[in-house]
Length: 220
Image (tube, rainbow, N blue to C red; front, top):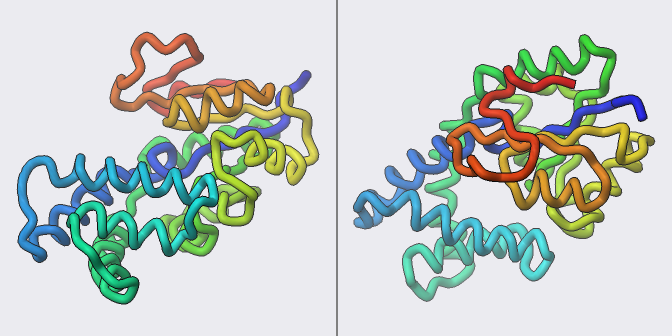
């Protein structure tokens, strides 16, 4: 089949989420008396664990935020206390959003080839739309699908099939591009979408999938 669309992940594919989150949590945690070189890694680990629970709809979006704070601080907190503390992190995190330099050129190459440029993100629609608006990505994207509007997030097959339905395309007509081997590549391949792993930091050198180091290498 002929390729008709390219679907990109958002965080750590088009937008540098890791850097924004790492800088935000260091500054936030320091204000709470929590310091050390492992702070970003500990926050990333608890965030991944509880965000995955949200993607499986075991807890709500707000609930995963509260659980991240409780786990990170190893503290029993009321919902109001956890919300207040998370707000301090969130303000710093959103201030640190930046777009990768290869993102807009890649999106424009997709459109120049006559293809649809779409985004499938495991995120809250409101937050992700603010992100792409603030970073100037909205005019470059034809369709954004956020997991908050889906029964479950990637790698659940329903995340991909719903996106295909919105595009009105068959799986073989759509290429998925993302940084997560599990969520963006293996999940897509499982439902018949061709997929490319964006491995910016060479984390998966032996992965038996199509792999690129920058979006500049993306061809279709």
